[in-house]
Image (tube, rainbow, N blue to C red; front, top):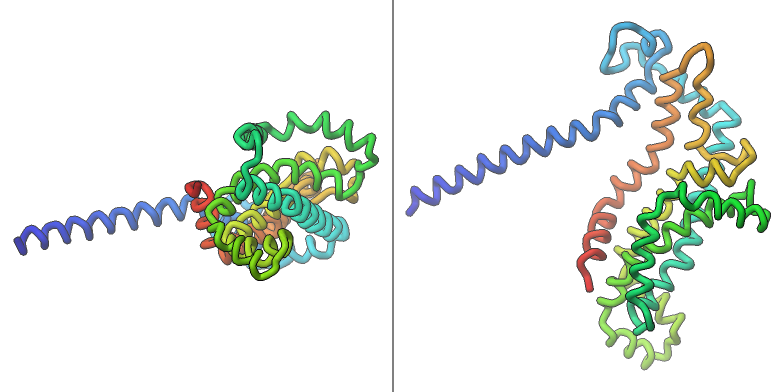
Length: 284
């Protein structure tokens, strides 16, 4: 009996070791592009264009980063990205969270049709929505403003918020509502004081995803912000390409600045994001 346990234990250790090795290899494959962006961003022009490929900066320099932050167009694009991402996030939360609350806590007639419609809208590509939205925003004088692309981005984020948070609201015990009413809480006060804290993990998840949706947007911002000075970071990375060549180190520094908020958000809020997505997917 002891021999069998020992053999089983050694097999489990060997299996765990193999799984760890595979996990490390997969992590390296996925993280190598990020490492390459960072390494290239600290190389000089001579090393970037050299015939010999170097896997780390032999001549470390901050010049590509300094050039970006000294560029007025880059700072303007950075401000535009922050404004569009924040505004689209706020619009998504204002419309998405109450809709998810209503769908999860009340028996809304035709709620299955609504949910199916939300799921279908998640499958539609952004290119399909550009022409009708452009015509509508043109009549509403929203072209060349932060509100135009923010509304377009929020139109895709709201269905995601509803589908994600509805199971959360549905899983909150109704006894909390009854206790809140006994204490004199109205619908709105109960919503903000009890419901939102009760589903904090889900709210953090949709906040992060909504912000990243606006931060990473290219199609809507390029289409609706017809003024060059209104375009975000994702739309201005081409400026380092010219007929004389491509400044790869500056492009990599630009890209590193663009992906840095995404990396930081996932590093510090990973447990909330993963837990929120998985919990929202299985709760009913």
